[in-house]
Image (cartoon, rainbow, N blue to C red; front, side, top):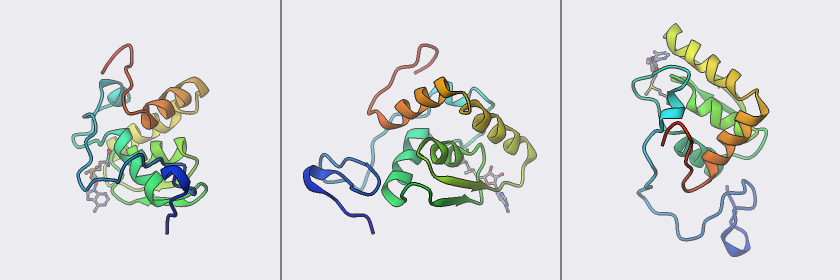
Length: 128
Ligand SMILES: C[S@@+](CC[C@H](N)C(=O)[O-])C[C@H]1O[C@@H](n2cnc3c(N)ncnc32)[C@H](O)[C@@H]1O
């Protein structure tokens, strides 16, 4: 269970609920920079997975995505200090996943992506 603290802060995850969360979430569509490591046909926006993870887990918990594709769940898990296991039947997608996870081993990229996943809007120099 996730508890909501004073002022709308989720005390376990750090997610802020400024207003009552709606049934329909409006988020920007996937950005160009998110596809830098290769293209997956149904890749999800990092911001969407980050929001789901913040709303449903706490730090250090394990997250399993058995249909991981390009591992947006994995990237969001790592940015938010969760443990991650991903499975996919397509080697090409697993290679994209590995590149994406490798990419955030760079501290600067990690911080950039973390910020992008938490901000309501974020503009990257080489994409929207
Ligand atoms: C909707 S995509 C996941 C996209 C992912 N959320 C992302 O952001 O990139 C579903 C994935 O499940 C994989 N898949 C489908 N059937 C599978 C199976 N039986 N075992 C493992 N992976 C499977 C597909 O290869 C595909 O990459």
